[in-house]
Image (cartoon, rainbow, N blue to C red):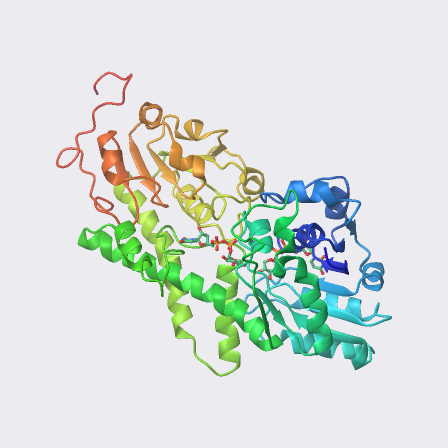
Length: 479
Ligand code: UDX
Ligand code: UDX
């Protein structure tokens, strides 16, 4: 690998920890900083506080050699050439990004600078943040020639963040000086030269030595806007296909077919056109609101994003009404739930549509039995076990004697259920699928009443007399 660079990464969360492991993987020395001492201790002892493919392997490979953990930001700043800020930028009540952690960390970094440093924004931050960090560092007495502030936004999807980092579509660098641009280009050289992809045990992914990720070198403002605009456009695609799904549902078309046809246009592309219960996570809801807020601050009305948010909220409500249309009444009904994280492949429940729907059902008096392969622990903190809430150890326990089964996120295992076993485990063979994991015809042929999003039969009224005579579940005498 090219010459190693010493890096500090402040914030060992979903972004910081993955960035630390990946920078070490490409040969750099990383000091991972966090003000949560318990988290630092867990990381030092080999604990991995988040669910990410390949993260355990990379941290085990580099811990104690190229990656170390500390709560001492001051020492880390002195030891590093580049200091990445990856602390949380949660949504404030006003909808803007809460940058107070970034502000606090920038001040603390400034007070520790004793030689030239590059401070790099890794967290998703609104345009103008770079300038503010520069101002804060100068106010703390650091001479202008002793530091630069650059922007290097991340495009990591939770669950695939390591592959997204090492096999990036592009590496965006916002730099105001040649010096900072050069150092950041050197930092990513093992990837942009293609060298990394030749190494033994390289993390597999779409990139190769002959097809390395390109670097986009631009202004700091453009880099900050690229990040917000990318997330806002991806969220817009999702809200768009969700409205199209609702049209398909009313018209009797299949949104999966429509999405396939739209996505075959190379200008649109097939990705992020999956209709469902709406988007969630720690990024899209926060970043759409923050970008809209940034627009307002510079005097631009981004009404489109208000619609994107409105559609997303309504999508959860529509799904909740779909459940009501299948069950008629809620109080005392047993509901099996598959999926609690905001999507499959992650343990993150932040802004999870699944939890929102579960909470609504609990408020209506339902009894819930929920299963998620990775998000149970975090979910228990928000919705503890109680007379109405149980956690199951597998999908069939969740479905046991349930009046209906809901599929609320897209873990692969939810798409591969044993339908015959499911059929007689449920009290009634009703499956309401918020992620379109199954084919409606196949489910009907397997004896289920199957409701999904944007497909024929998704909004049928379930009158057992008129439209569907439910043969008694196997193993029970006729009612
Ligand atoms: C990050 C980015 O902050 C966010 O902009 C992006 O959109 C998603 O990824 P995330 O990594 O999910 O957010 O944040 P979080 O999981 O909350 O981790 C932030 C870490 O920073 C936490 O471990 C927290 O303890 C730490 N932290 C926070 C500090 O070390 N110092 C602080 O002052 C504040
Ligand atoms: C997103 C961006 O993809 C990533 O580039 C950025 O760095 C952080 O935010 P993430 O939030 O981890 O990543 O997950 P993502 O896979 O983008 O899904 C976001 C939400 O959209 C999830 O709730 C997912 O279920 C939903 N989604 C995604 C859809 O409903 N339909 C789709 O077609 C794709």
